[in-house]
Image 1 (cartoon, rainbow, N blue to C red):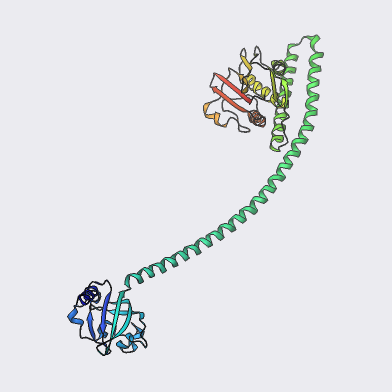
Image 2 (cartoon, one colour):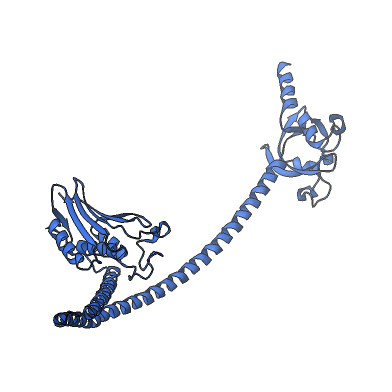
Length: 396
């Protein structure tokens, strides 16, 4: 009795539907889950043919071309499982999986069906199929986009190769032109410089201020043209990567005194270039020629952008870690809005007016300094002057 009661309790509380029919297809029992699934009360189903729970149209379930109970029959004692469609009381057709087994009870065969609703599983499967199809479309679209991108990149690569080839040709042409210009311009400039010097010497006995004035102008123009030519040559060599620093040890004070002597001759009336050194050593390990070019360029700018009767302070400082080279003028200064472009080639501040210059000097100084593993710093204000500092690591 206890086993029978337990079996009844299990059937009543089973999650899946359980139904039994006889060999004629008559429903003999149905549990609450099956009643809920088909939306029938128990008394509406028991004693009825199982066909009431199955769609009547063959297209709804092709298996149902045969009698309903034969769907549940099998030829051996092994359980049968299949997916079919069910018909609810309200006419809704839904899919379910049924596991069928038969037993002999009191001399007759009873069929038992275990029913599991497949509605949610099928919906999930359809969603998964739709999602997979959507993913395939996305992959196809991305593949086409990738192909187009690759084609565009190949086209851009081809264009870049052509552009680089043209740029190289233009670069070679520019290099040849600059080299030719250097050779062709330097000779007449040297002749002009020599002639102006001779004229100055020959006219000294006549003591003619006007002649001396105009000869001085000629010399200044020749100096400006020589500076421009040197700037273009330096830039061309930098662009071509043909400048390699040659490091060697030399006396910084001797170089500084040499530079001051040369630049003082180019200074304006009553301009004074001062120099002093601080630190325990005067020996510096850098490229002598490049460093001299940097300092002359900075002092030349200080002369150009400062007025008469002004000082230009040139100083060097040897610390434990760095060599510092300072050039301070008290001229027109650099506008704050222009300072971010200061080291760009061909850039000139908007307050330079008619002062001669190519806009290449500071770019060359910055690149020479970088080649020597140094850094350039500055501080400037309008009408208060500018201070440039070259910093190089101390070589011990």
